[in-house]
Figure (cartoon, helix red, strand yellow):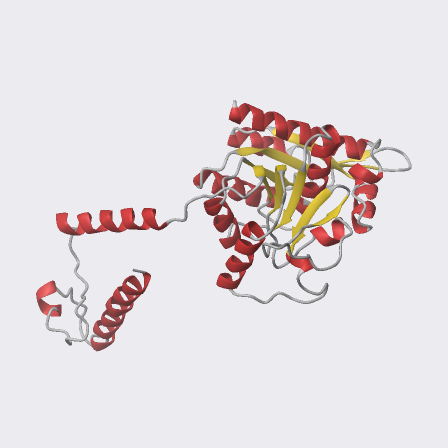
Length: 333
């Protein structure tokens, strides 16, 4: 079907170019269907400048129905009850750090819940560093990959399958194949929540995951900065278009507090994410401060929720986790 459509387009486009170049030195005229139909026999399609007729509209409708039938059917991940995606429209806003501490916050709030992390950022995997994990996953008897585990959280990432500094220079089809393997060929066991750290933007990976896996909800991470909020809104609108509930927005790096004088400075602006949440009709799940300990502990592979559980920073992440669970319960109830 795709090949036929491509040939149809290329043939029409080629014929249009021939008509254009043939008339460069002639007065501009509107060619009619009768004029064009004697074109070379190898191109049976031609351009007409008229309103779409009834039969053509019917053909377009049938094509749309065919495309709708061709979309992949969502299939749950074996053993996983609910999938939460953590996304951002722009890189560098703390999405991966938020995803890791959200997963740890879910287990800290309710130790009876089992939580896993899937790093879907194929080009720039961060979970191995953030969770202090190295090595290749072992295979089960069923030829499934066993996730690597730390802090009681099973994790899977492309970073476990390549060397630390090896660039992943892949085209879209290879990336889609990798995502499919990370989704379907991992032995997650039984999980209450699988937190997926999405790549930034609104591209193939996001569409592939949302079309293949039922998503319980999306968490959007953004700083209060206007330029970040523009892309965060695009991310939220994308999830709405693919019928994924937006659980809310996490306002990251919301305020900086001087460690010496405790003076607070809104480096990236104040309450920008709250204004965006009001525009989108969603709630702010929480505010995460711009704090030195979050950065230091993340670089050491010791997320602040487990390394400094009594700190205000860890409490902020646990509040986000609480808000996420509440939103999931509201949606399911």
